[in-house]
Image (cartoon, rainbow over all chains, first blue to last red; front, side, top):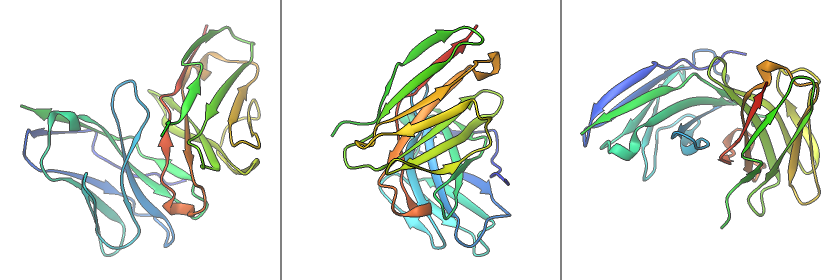
Length: 109
Length: 115
């Protein structure tokens, strides 16, 4: 079971964009890429997901490489409330989630 | 609408005992999945139930089991507890019909401490 690979931590200034990379080099053609985030003492919260093309929603954007071996979550303007652990996840055709180790995002005022 | 509710939120057990955790999904959600979160292993998939049937299973020993009821509520049980079972157990629900595109809603978790 190949998991996703993410940096341990990233730091950003408030109101600056944050680009969170994720490597999923062994992804299969039917696996979806999901991003969730987890604040302390809470369960993970959905951020965004996609299959092949780039996706945007009110929280973030997801840029998926053409070969699908990597993706980047983009938080356009980081706020203090965006400080959390961000998980890049592969979801297979059965809906089984494979979580990565997560990236701790620190936002500095 | 009400979110995913997990009970109890905290519990302490001793080695050898068993424990049952409960999860009430969002109304209308037919899929419930369970995850174990530890500092060393991160978030690991335990199993998933859809319409009372186990549809997916992770790589955990048989001491870990679960079930789902006709109202979609789910329970997981861990028998013969070991120290290493100390973890945050998270439950997530979804509509369950979109395979890899299913969006999960997580509960706040049940924190189990085994002494």
